[in-house]
Amino acid sequence: MTRPQGVIALSCGEPGGIGPEISVKAWEALRSTCPLVWLGDPRALPEGTKWAAVDTAAEARDCVEDAFPVMEIPFAGDMTPGQADPRNAAGVIQAIETGVSLVQSGHATALCTAPINKKALIDGADFAYPGHTEFLAALGGKERVVMMLASERLRVVPATIHIALADVPSVLTPELLRETIEITAAGLTNQFGIPQPRIAIAGLNPHAGEGGAMGKEELAWINDLVAQLQRDGFALSGPHPADTLFHAAARANYDAAIAMYHDQALIPIKTLDFDQGVNVTLGLPFIRTSPDHGTAFDIAGKNIANPDSLIAALSIARSMSHSTENSAETSVG
Image (tube, rainbow, N blue to C red; front, side, top):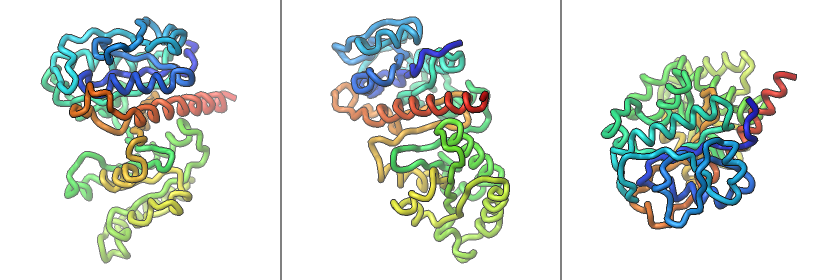
């Protein structure tokens, strides 16, 4: 099937959050360069939004410059800004599933997801996943995916994510780190168009263990794993002390950094580019991006939400789509 060039499926996320508002703002900023189709209940859209109902992504491309294209998914609950109604959970989930179906069938080139409220999904639909990423992995038939946080200044991947710091040393295994590196390298090549990506590995311990004085994991296995993957052809460096890995001169030496735990990865990117960080899921059989923020119930409905992260997420999805198509053409050639 021939894809409508560049059409991105945008799932609505939690309708009581800022997702609908920033979706319209992002469309206003990008409609002439980044066609999208919004999946959700139009009752959640800001009052006065000029929207058009569409049945296909191709129809969305035809109308996107004049009206906000909406593939309607009726929700059962209320659409009150700042409040999550569990009755909408089934609709929110259906919007995500529809987006996945569109990209897997080739009707859209990428999926961008607005933030969800996990408690509302659990309360309203017994949602069985820790979050968006795990649900998408299940829909894509993948056991292991990788979360990358990306901006123009930095791409960083946490090897372990939402676990207690005390649990990191036991969860972080050679197998987990190897898979993280392999998936990251493949994603940088196939979806970001970087033929031989340079990846910097952060140490787990302060000063990367300082020869065992501040922790043993580097000496016990991290150094050896990095060396083995280097012999296998990966362009890796490290493990580096994390406190010297993210300044400008250091960032010039790699295409992405792999951190060992959540805050080690997210603090630098949120410090460098708080409003334009993007969550990219690598390892899925399709492109998925998301703004790197939550539902922001406290400002929903006030028309003050900053759309920059969603604009960046849509822009990166578009760029990744082009890189993926070019990579596929090169492979065929």
